[in-house]
Every structure is written in structure tokens, then in C-alpha cells.
Amino acid sequence: MRTKYIFVTGGVTSSLGKGIIASSLGKLLQSRGLSVTIQKLDPYINVDPDTLNPYEHGECYVTVDGAVTDLDLGHYERFLGEELTQANNVTTGRIYQSVINKERKGDFLGKTVQVIPHITDEIKHHVKILGNTKKYDVVITEIGGTVGDIESLPYIEAMRQLRWEMGTKNCLCIHLTYVPYIAAAHELKTKPTQHSVKFLLQSGVQPDILVLRTEHTLSDNVKKKVALFCNVDKDAVVECIDAPTIYEVPLLMHEEGLDNIVLQKLGISDADEPDLDQWKDFLSKYKNPTTNVNIAVVGKYVELPDAYKSILESFIHAGAANECKVKVSLIQAEHVNHENAKEKLDGFDGILVPGGFGDRGIEGKIEAVRFARENDIPFFGICLGMQCAVIEFARNVLGYSDAHSTEFAPTTTHKVVDLMESQKHITGMGGTMRLGAYPCQIKNNTLAFQIYGREIIQERHRHRYEFNNDFLKEFEENGMLASGLNPDSNLVEIVEIPSKKFFIAVQFHPELQSSVLKPHPLFKAFIKAANDFKK
Ligand code: GLN
Image (cartoon, rainbow, N blue to C red):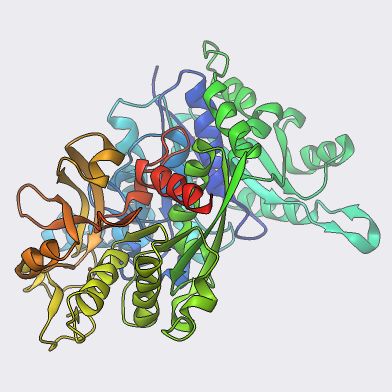
């Protein structure tokens, strides 16, 4: 079968959940025996989100091959259970960078380089890269932003051209819009949808399927009206009502017939019936917990939970695996200090310190580690969280009161966390950290080994600083063990305190490898430990 392409665009407003619709459709098609991948086109000019503050677009996701990407790739991976790569996320910055590099090389010698055709050709090339691998029956491409945005115009034009080239049987457009409910009039309003479809039409694209986000059930009449005014088949107007969890959306979309209409429009008649048993099993465990735990996440971007998206989702996966409801409280690290740590953190069954950059809130995170360690509360540190655990141990157990990371105290005498050798000569900012998957060798008879059940693991990274091995012997003699090391460079990847019930911290980001059907072992073990602690 030749690869089929599906574009997902959004209208009316942002935050409608295009990523969840793309992921849910991907999951449904995958459950029907098709091989699927999902790609995101981001209209911003950053080459990748690596230099963005998480307050801008939420967390930066990292793929195995070290691409720093939009957080939607996290949804795609968690739904599909497949590893994606740099090819799955393209930004305007990357497109322009590539076109400008070609221009400098003389590839367009003599020609004026323009948005059409040069930028649009480059976009089309990046969409087709995935299909050209011949690995996928279906490539779903989500176009970021909202139609009508100036910056997404070249993407809409590239989609129009691809549909014209391939035919709409091979290249669908699904448009996601919003149907607001006006309480005073007791009415659902379709006008914003009509306008947004009109905008697509002006750009030469007649959407094939409309997915309507709504807080209230849409009557048949509303669907008919949308179908008529927007020039789509009535069956192709799909309701997407608010769901209690994003993981329910694939089932809702199947009930609404989204996968069937897609298959029909793509002319795929031999797909299996969807096999969603494992997915349903996960949902049933998630919805029927037998216990619950309270977890504190002490970080500095807490006002925007999307900054911790993958961690929050990992808790959902791990909670379901433990049949346990995980209630997460995001605590502003800046507000935690030595005096109030007990008041802020007492009563939690587990404390997690996540990754981060810059010194805001750092002392609060270190206090949170101290509170967890001294009270033997299950503790889980991730990336900067591990670095804080190391600093705390050096200060309060080894007695080095000035111990710090050189990220925050470049001249301190006890540099227990220091810039990696490989980072010392790097001056550029984007995409220059230690990124992507690296192996880690786990020592026998450690908590880490008990959790992973194997010696060699691969986990994803995004950092510049590392545990300073000059101090390793002293740490180990005093009770903090490096239970996981990179086999090639000896970088410390996991530390633990064996005398505690559950105290583990990792330099990598396990939250980037947790999916619905494969919850991450560290998160699973942490929730189990929190549950045991509670008892
Ligand atoms: N800022 C730290 C470093 O660069 C930690 C990074 C992180 O938590 N992702 O090493």
C-alpha cells in the first residue's frame, strides 16, 4: 500500500487538543493493523524549542536521537508506544535554516529564493521524508497554531499542494474546531467553525473531516448545519466532547466513527477491527483505583503544569499500573525553605524534584530533598533533581556547607556537580546539551537493579552538568551510592541511598519513556513505595 497522509489543522482557537486528536487517530489506526507515525510542524522561528523557557510552550520533549521537540511528540509516543525522531518535528526555523544553507551553497544559483516554491517545497520534503522510509501506511501531520495565523500560511499552502499532487484519496485534511455554548441563549454556535473552514477554503483547502470540540453533545441538526455550510459529508462531522481523561479520546473517537470515516476516505478497505483491549484495561485500572497517594513535585515552573507534562502523564501510567490514584501537588520551590519545609511537605507520601535550569528555587529544592531524606519519605530526583540530591548530601551529610553545582556557584570550593568535560568548550546555546539516549550500566544488588531488573538500560538526557566523580568515593563511603554509570564515560547516571526505604535520583529523564501500555519502572516503583510508606 502506498503511504497515505493525513493533515490535522486547528481553527477558532488554540489549545483545542490537536495533538490529542492526532494521537487518538494514530492509536485507532494502529489498533486496526496499520503502521502509523505522527509528525508536528511548528510555525515558530526557533530551530527547535531547546532555548525556550518552559513557560512559553510547556516542557521540551527529547527523542532518542537527541532532538529537542514540542511536547506533542510526548503525546504521540505515549499513545503509539513508538519511538519518534527529529524527522517527526519540524519548525519554521529549521525549514528556513535548511533553505538558507542551500542558497549559500549555490543550490538555487541565479534564482530568487521565495516562500513559494522554496519554503513550501522544503515543508513538503519534510512531510514526505517519513513516508519515503516506506515504514508507514499512514503519516499524520499536525500543523501547529490556528488557521488564519500569518505564520502558518506556508504550511497550509504546502498541504494544499500535496493534496493536489497526491489526490485527496491519499492526502486528507482533518480540521479541528470549537463549537462554543452560549449559556444566555442556551445555544451551541457553529459560526466560528464556518468562518474557520471559510479561511481554509480561501487558501484552497476543502477539509475532508471536521472534528468539533464541544462541552455539550451536538444534536443531529447542529452536525447537519455544519456539514451543509462547510461543504463536508454529514458522517464526516465528528463530535469531540470533553473527556475526563485524554486517554479516553481514542475510544470516544471510535464511537464517533472517526477511524471508519478516515479509512473510507483513504480507500483502505482491508483494515482489521480495532484491538483496544489493553488500552481499555489500562483505562479501567485508571478509573477504578483501590488506593491513593499524595505526591509533591517541588519545581519552579509550577504555574504552568504543561512544563511537567511528561512527569504528570508518567504518574497516570504508573498509578494505573498500581491501581492507585496519584494526586500530584505542584509546589513552588521558591516558597520552600528550611523553616517551612515541614509545613509545606509534611503529609506527602512521596517527593519528586524534577529537572530545571537556573538558580531560581534551587535552595527550596535542596530543602525538599533534605526533608525527604531526613524523614525517610520516598524520594525521586530527576536531572536537576538528582543534582540537588547530591548537593544536599554533600552539605548535610558530608558537611561541606558550600557544596554546590557550578551552574549556580561557579567558584565554590566543593563543586560536587560540575560542567561536563564535553561541554566546557561549547558556546552555542541551541541543541548543544548532552541530548538523547545513552546507555547506563546498573550495579547488582541495588534499588535501581531491583527496579529495572537488568544491567544495561537506555535513557534520554538533556543536561550540561554532571556528578563530579572526584567526590564519588567519599559519597559512597558515607552512604550515597552511584548505582548506575555510563559504561563509556563513567558519568554517574543514578544515585541512591541504600539505608533509606526509597531514595533514588537519576541524571536522565525517565518520564520521556513512559507510555500508556508501558509505564516506566521507576515511576511504578516510586508509586508503590509511596503507597507502602502511606500504609
Ligand atoms: N540544569 C541542569 C544541567 O544542565 C539540569 C538540567 C535538567 O534538569 N534537564 O545539567
